[in-house]
Amino acid sequence: MELTERKKRVLRAIVETYIATAEPVGSKAVVQASGLEVSTATIRNEMSDLTELGLLEQPHTSAGRIPSPAGYRVYVNELMDRQQLSVQETERINRALNLKMEELDRVIDRAGRVLSQISDYPVFTAAAARAKITVKRFDLLMVDSNAFIAVVMTDGDAVRNRLLRIPEGVTDTQLQLLSAVLNTSFVGIPMEEMQNTLDRMETRTAAGAFRLISLVVDFAVEVLNELSRQKFRTAGITHLLEHPEYRSLEKAKPLMTYLSEEGDVSRLPATMGAGKSMEVLIGPENVSEALKDTSVVMASYDIGDNMRGVIGVVGPTRMDYAKVTARLSYFADSLTRMFGKGELPAGEDNDEAEKKPGK
Image: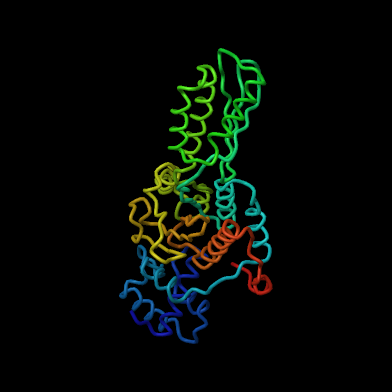
């Protein structure tokens, strides 16, 4: 739809005022926010036209207007200014992401928590699973004669450990020999090959030693299975309660419950359109019924090995889109540089950001 320049300024003023106040916006407020040198009667006419176009709504009997999902869509696509992050914000994000030696899911978890704190909205993260993850090293640590700790490190530097108990007992020398066998025969190969190697080993290994090897290999396969599944987590769900739309527990509870159920990735909009690095879904554009009255902003990032992840923000349709997209874009770029190139953004825009901080 083609809007006149004045209608665009009126729509922009209403969206940004409503984002800031969560209250229906009247004509006097529009005059002040838009900078238009026209009468309130003229503004009311423009507001009426925008309502007829489906870009504004009039709640109850109030004289003020609020944006509709279609109005937010026009704002995001055409009217919203691109924001820069402040120096303090970029430093905070970089500190959260400066964990290059830690495993992927810990980095993503921390990124989600920090983004939620900065944006004041819930955040979800979905990291694509690695197709060919393998064990890089086994370590076996003696606890006592009937127990030891098996430590498994993967080629992605994920580390898992488990206490294994063995009624028949084991010596430290046996444990060292077992560690040597594991690191010789079960490192750097796919899960399926680990199982095949174990099967071949059964007929030519003493029963007691084979039982110990099987215990550790089964644990390693369990670890690889867990790490090969797509990771989906949420952070900052209680931030919903800080927004007027969700101060009623009756309104907030269904969405909070929905976001809390992290296991089923398929329920959430964790996939991006082809060729897109940023996606904004407003109200009814969300497929899930639980998200029909919310907006979801997502950005994708490159994990390396031809894999991509998604980080997204969930909030009311009265979301501060400019603020959220700026922070989300920086996060996604930071994650891509860190995982793909082993570096963080150089902060080229920091001078400009200092002059024009985010809202």
